[in-house]
Length: 217
Ligand code: HEC
Image (cartoon, helix red, strand yellow):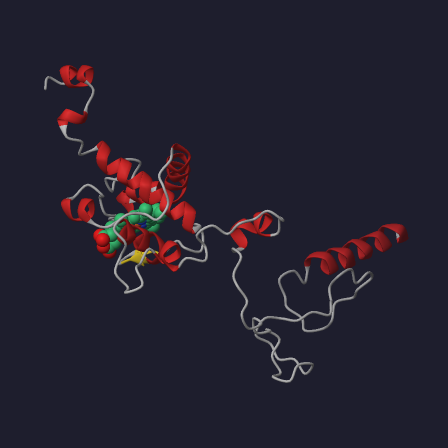
């Protein structure tokens, strides 16, 4: 009987201590058997710091620093034979002429690889809203996202620079994607969008003879 009482008391104490305080908050420092890496000397963004004269943790970029890429292409940036093609060109990065107008045609030359890259990135970043054919029939349509179709005269007539601008900074309800897509990938997407537009609006005489016959033209 005594053993039973001791066990009983033990079970109650164990249950209360393990489950009883779940979810309750305490301001006391937790008991720390091993502190692991809980506390480390570090500088936090936008915090103050008595070490520097201006008392800021964030250090300003040294004067005359030239960007050599961004976090998208770190490996290349730090390799010896990296050449930042285009990245130093404002036109390439912004899609705009120096007077602020959009450039007519994309500043890099089209190739099959670029088209494939554009397709891949389009599938990842645009299909959900704009649909695989760029007609605005993405999977988000039933939920009220009315993404534009690329197949209207206005967008067919828009400059490459303008399309690049929409991808970079968004328009209306569409958010910009420049934080996720590099300039090269954005131009690749522009190229692929042109292919999509052409796929829905090709003049009949550009079709192969065989296909024209099949649809009776
Ligand atoms: C979250 C949904 C969404 C995603 C993802 C998205 N868009 Fe859009 N897009 C929209 C909506 C909504 C509009 C209509 C914006 C408006 O006019 O308010 C639009 C408009 C556009 C337009 C037409 C702009 C104009 O002048 O009318 C283009 C071009 C475009 N998107 C390209 C893209 C490309 C390329 C991608 C992928 C890189 C993309 N969008 C990703 C929702 C999206």
